[in-house]
Length: 470
Image 1 (cartoon, rainbow, N blue to C red):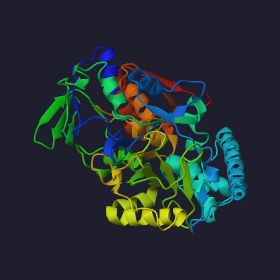
Image 2 (cartoon, rainbow, N blue to C red; image 1 turned 180 degrees about the vertical axis):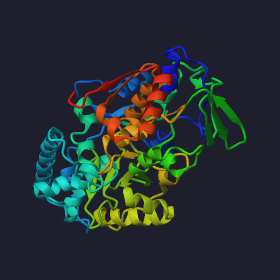
Image 3 (spheres, rainbow, N blue to C red; image 1 turned 120 degrees about the horizontal axis):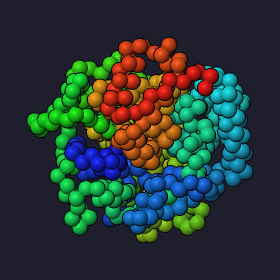
Image 4 (cartoon, rainbow, N blue to C red; image 1 turned 90 degrees about the horizontal axis):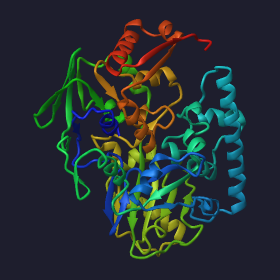
């Protein structure tokens, strides 16, 4: 999207260096069980509201197969740690408490913002309300409601950053599940085809170069030098760096000179979460199918332990595929064990629910985004204690190096449309960089001058110094 925006503004002397052998990043399809599954981004989040999500528009343009995934009946499909079905009345009782606590949290955020008070975590808001999920069922309901979206638990997540969730508020609370043999990444190919040369839908433009893992970036006042793992190097006037936050934190790329301390501190204040979908292929269906059965939940005594299960019978009839989502510490634990151990753990849960006679899984697919050196996680999360000033520093350019990606989207970090807007914004040739007077007082004057100088020189922006009461 950044390159497309540059092209629209008459800038075509650029190169796109891609570390892997494909484009799409964490939008990545895999063939499994004779079908195409998404091991990364899977949903177009933010559908059904007053505004049209641009990703949904792109999906319509490309004819991408998307489905409404029905989570409304999950309350009828909870099972306790022994695999026994939990009565709907018990689940609804917990769900009502959860909804009441969420409503309280929304009101609390409004008060915090109005009074300029200190942020709290989502869990702290639950505590203030008087409801803290503790039982296996309460934790399971809370996990489906929160962790399945943020990929991290309420205890570490900033209340102000997720309440109310901007994506849901602006674009709608529904989503579309992508199930297409071309993959979710088809949207990236579609964007590329609008400004890059292609043949029969295949991008052939020489400005897109694959298998170029950048390892060093040297930057000066007048240019930037990029050094690639294969020994090649490139020089440019400016660089837009779109690596993930996890890769930025991993120091796969060395900077010379080192990035300033204010930049490094801001980088490590944010989290790179892991959202893992484990796919299992079976010889036949042994789970309920049809309307109202797409999702079921296992209420383990361990939070997030093989909690949320989904089948693909609507998207791929006869595929006999289940997938279970794990996040955070459970995902990190599973990444470091063998697939056979993971399969045994998953089968133990399924046999508790559906009985010991169910067939063993024929195959298993376990993505490992946290261990992928070119990604180092699934998407970013905004933890408690991170301020807007921290975000501005995370996003700010350093010399002639600019940073973009979903983690630089203020309202939509963690989402594909966040990456879409971030690329578009960073490549725009005109910005309005608005700073309050307190920045000049509270920030290091040298750092501030660097940001202002770089922004005004490179992006030709208009700088407004505003009064704090404005």
